[in-house]
Length: 151
Image (tube, rainbow, N blue to C red; front, side):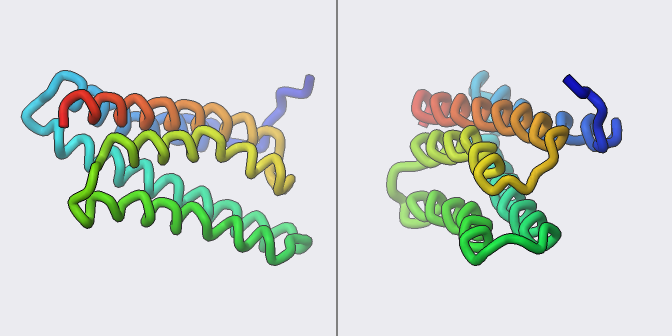
């Protein structure tokens, strides 16, 4: 197996460092720190921002490939729309944040399947994407379970 990569060490380290905000939010919420509720909303905001960012990555890859059709662009805008839809229950004072965090985490967890289907990502990028999406997805789902226990 070819383990060469076009990703720089900085891109990998900073990618993995991107899990730290969610680890901090989960830790604060799990120990019911005085900022636990802030950690829940911050964890949702962070995961939603990253999920929206993934849509931007897909959009950029579609443009760069020169071979993507309208479906690729439609898929690329879905993460932002899904993130906003998952925020609406909180906006209206309905049940939140546990279910929204769990759904958002699940979407992030399976998002590399979209990359695979689009076929626009390089193998080294896909390896990093899988690691980061599994990490952030699981952390976000765990934050949702903590939310259900404390809210």
